[in-house]
Length: 460
Ligand SMILES: Nc1ncnc2c1ncn2[C@@H]1O[C@H](COP(=O)(O)OP(=O)(O)OP(=O)(O)O)[C@@H](O)[C@H]1O
Ligand SMILES: [Mg+2]
Image (cartoon, rainbow, N blue to C red; front, side, top):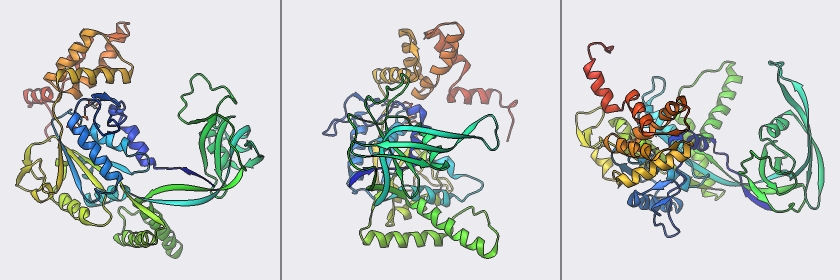
């Protein structure tokens, strides 16, 4: 029996895609003793904070941090969000990571505590092993039968497919239905791909590619495992798979089940804005049972709350209670505020966080950068975005980063590139940066601007 990890945590993948400003951050850049390398994994400097973050990652992996919380503090643009994202990347795909901005709590539709609760449940995983029956082999032949799209006559969609799978010892031709054919097309399955089709659910997984069966096209970026030779064994077999799902997935599945039951009973459905607490209670009870039977293991993930000073006193006390409960994720918060009022009160507190919560936090300071470090970050970012900077353009950006902020300086790169392109240059020069800085102002300047024109701007 073979074993393979197949994790489908779409939400985490979504987060890692959404944070395009940090796409150059690939991890914490630590050596095998946990010591930060000055420039590695897209990370520059910030050595102490990275070392602390590395210790946090180790504690999370060993399950020794559940129910605790971490606070990242530092001035704007010092890399707090970048650090949290690096932690997510270090944790690997099957540790849940959920990102929430303090401002997201204030939705007109859903209660603050419900938004928090949902994020918390998405940050806790349940890992289990499952024996599945699969067809697994290397694609030798693939042919689609196409049909016109039901709504759009200009496109065609697969109606079915014939696919031949092979291993060193076995070969099988399968005729598959539309749902599998569509997946094969979406995954862009070609000759030479090693795939696995779940015999019961029909889910298709791409596992790798065999070298040399069909030449890869020049634009292919191979992100899959490359196999040196054909795999052995039967095509149709049983296989052990490790999966991680979150408590939130279970809540939703349970709620959908109950809704279906109610609907068939009274014949109407209702739009639920929040989950009935009874549902979560029932799910917790089931989970506790399978945990104690040893059928599954708990994987406490990470909930990252950025701009945590946006939380109000009610949300903070809710979080404190959650931290004490048995199913609690690791909570990492970040803020750039000093002493400020706790929202919803008249009380001032460090970082706008109530004192009883502050008391239990591990606090990591994130320091401002030196000129040299900012230069390095700017160069990495330009490289990541495919922007060519002249020497004096780099100097101009470093100067702006020092006087204004690193984030602002980085944001100017793209407009400056457009300006350079209009002058038919592919290299960005200092003059383009200066022009961009005139056209797009930073926050401090925009406040001054608003003050100056107060009378003319729209009032609330
Ligand atoms: N040490 C670093 N190495 C590489 N890139 C960095 C580093 N620190 C910050 N960056 C990059 O600089 C930009 C600004 O950093 P980031 O958004 O993480 O700052 P922040 O501390 O979260 O700021 P704020 O308080 O305004 O939210 C991002 O694109 C980030 O990826
Ligand atoms: Mg941030």
